[in-house]
Image (cartoon, rainbow, N blue to C red; front, side, top):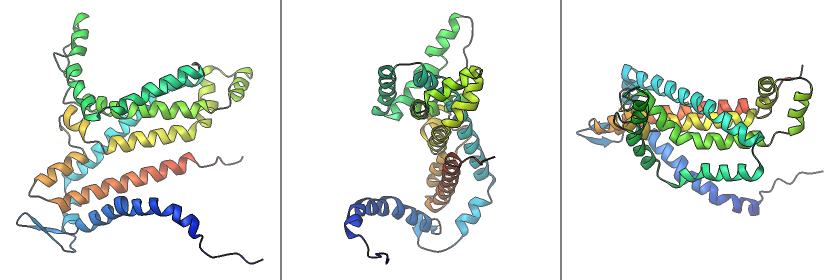
Length: 284
């Protein structure tokens, strides 16, 4: 029996729009950014070249690696906080709330995405400032005022504003699809609530949990608004370093090097997360 190796032009015609879109607006800019990282800046103007000067300069500078590891650290901390804060909410919506309540809660979690993230971030100035709402409430019980703006705490608040609704939604969907009979069987066999969560719910919701963590890390790692406006750029992250580099003598090629390193890191995290999420457990 011979296999038909002729291309299916009908199927290809339906794939062409997304292929063209990805080529123009994803692959094209990436290729141009990689090429630009080898350009040179002379008299504040970029000139085409193929030199490793920009890579050598950025890869050997301590401030780049300080920003790199700081960005990874604070994005990882944001992911940990987001996953821990979201889990009780998602667990309640998945196992304790009715279908209508869960549907309404997910709708309410989507609503913040209808407004500008920048506007939501600026609203925290009113809440976190030393004369703001939160310090006023703490003052009623004899605490404060505390400095929360221009700190790591302020940056994390901004990251949670960006990522927490999405993490709650993904965790809720992951746990809502678990077969309830398996949870009931664990209870019947004597598993305590925490044991059930650790040994039944988390393994069954592993894929959704890891995807939620990956999204949280990616959004936090690449965010500029929170560390700049709420964190005060005290310890610059890589997005802030890109802005500072472009302002310093129009060094767009060096900024391209930083951006490429960010993308390589995010690709590595994404592929590692997906591989872990869909890895099958070894049969004992």
